Amino acid sequence: PSDCTPLGIPRAELIGKLFDDVVPNEVSSVLIEKFRRCAQSGEAFDDQRTLQLPTGPHHYHSTLIPVHDESGRVHRIVGIARDMTAHHRTESLLTTQLELEAQFRRLAESTLDVICRYDRQCRLVYANSGLSTTLRKPLREMLGRTPTEHEPDGRYAQYQALLADVIETGTEH
Image (cartoon, rainbow, N blue to C red; front, top):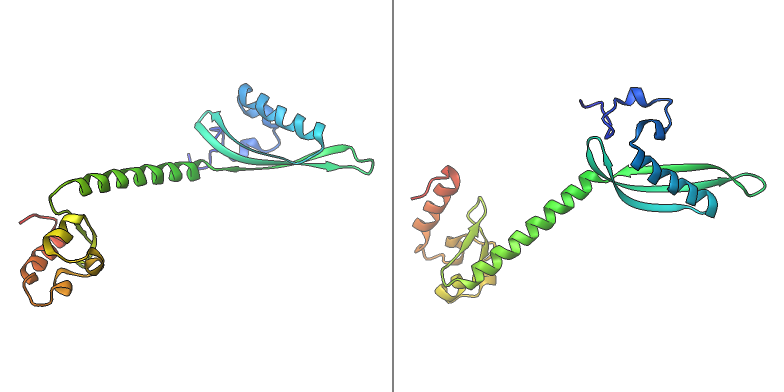
């Protein structure tokens, strides 16, 4: 349910409870140790950690700040924790995407065939060196332009029309 926390407990049921009453023992012991270190040192404690919770692993960035009384003793600890799970997931997906892109580029550059990628307006967004070799034209002059823009004499008008149709309909010719 959407009102459940990463602990698998609705938010309303957490009100008034201590964290060691609602988190698994192995998580509780980790958190208690963090509080203990903060209280003993009297200094702020910053930490990033993955906790195994009932809803699965969650990544947290937390800061504990000791509050000192008039005599300098720690009498309270203020803590803030931010669930970074979505951020970690996004970062992981981005890393995977970048790795796949790099693999594609290595493969595309190692083939003798011409490989091109166009956007929805038929502008060239990627081409391997095969295109530059075939057309005897620097790639930088073609990127961001449509086939009829980099060869305005009309010889690629039919190619661009077919390309536009494939982009529009998703069917090959």
